[in-house]
Length: 296
Length: 95
Ligand code: SF4
Ligand code: SF4
Image 1: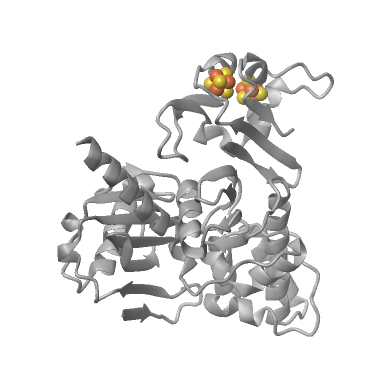
Image 2: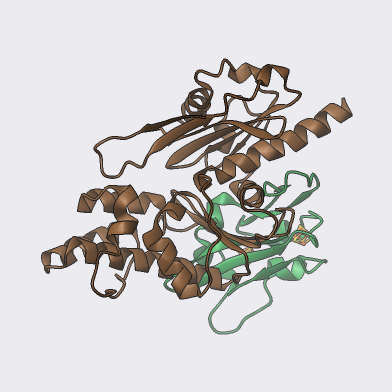
């Protein structure tokens, strides 16, 4: 396994990463498919060879969606000898899904996250919460990963990755440490009132001025975010097994507080769940390629 | 699939709820809606479903409270044009 990680000194920056499986001889493959998830904050590419993950990439989305799609896919493929032209079928997903220049089809992240979560966690997943860069979605799915019910919060960037980035920067705490730091407190503070990016910033600045330690402000913000999402989940309810995908799933400060409020634990995995949408897209690409080939 | 389009904010929950299994894409609700909130299109959430269904337009998804306000006077509550137009009972509103 070849793994590479990029780090920088900027607080809002999370770790970009790539991975590939050198034991797979892709030149002998019958099917090579890709899923490319271009989100508002991060982009992921997953390349599958005969249904197995061959390469992955996860990086920040640039100012142009088509470039981000190309960059993240090329980054995933770097050093493998495979080129984008070698991929038989690509599905684009996420916010920038129609801007994946080499994709044959675009599918929403709702369908792709459900399919991806089913693959990552197995068929027991019934509820998933995708906490992405700019919105938040609650999805119920069946044992095949097919969407039964979904709710998308289209309104506000609040309980999201972008909000967390702004917050990390403001408090000068690396975003990957926010979760941990939020538990370095003696007792749980009341949640801040708003999780809106703009208001939270003002509110946090006020609390810091009032003498609150950083850790306490972070704890209050994490619980506000957890609370807001829990409220959103009320409408469709939470059935076991419950999982969280997307960038915020890596923030234990939010995840643990949400589990507590809902009284239900999330399934855990070592797999990078920020890749869920891209995995689902690559799986759809495989199914569509088969359909395509049998029709031809 | 049950699709919830809309949002929740401090003032309430504003979702248009569609049962995609019941919707046949006839477009009667689209014609009944004078404000352009609804449209018929391919289901972007189900790659294997090729028949058209009704969708809430991107433009209106994050302002339904205001978009649908004309149909929802505070005093009396007449039936909603979109909901009454649907022959299959596929549409409902959360507020
Ligand atoms: S309530 Fe009125 S404005 Fe809203 S979708 Fe129905 S017909 Fe259109
Ligand atoms: S009227 Fe009913 S069945 Fe026809 S498009 Fe609208 S929701 Fe679908």
